[in-house]
Length: 158
Image (cartoon, rainbow, N blue to C red; front, side, top):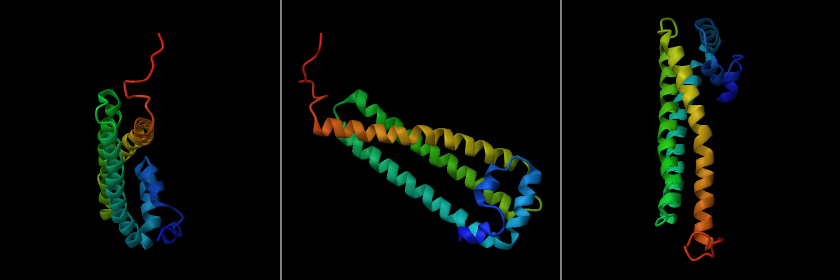
């Protein structure tokens, strides 16, 4: 499906990166013959958003369960859960703006381009926090689970 879309000379990510009406209109015109595939890819992107939400939320939940009793350490997966929800929310909003542009290529509101770009910017900023937070939560959970580093019985240096 992606190859079929790219035969137009553009990809869906190029539309999401477009910042002017002229750029968007040029890409929409090129994508017109494969718009069915583009719409299907947009729908599948929503499934990817849900899958990512469930995966990251589940991994943070496991880390949180392991870090139970370590209030300060448990903040990491809690923050990760919140960031995950918001990053997926902005990804969904970005997809919504794109779908609204696709469904009305001749008369879409220009504000949709700004909303699409803003949503994408916020999404990537959140993803830049989301992935490292998940990694840190997993590392902390493994350290707590398999070492005595945070059990309160470790020797403290004075």
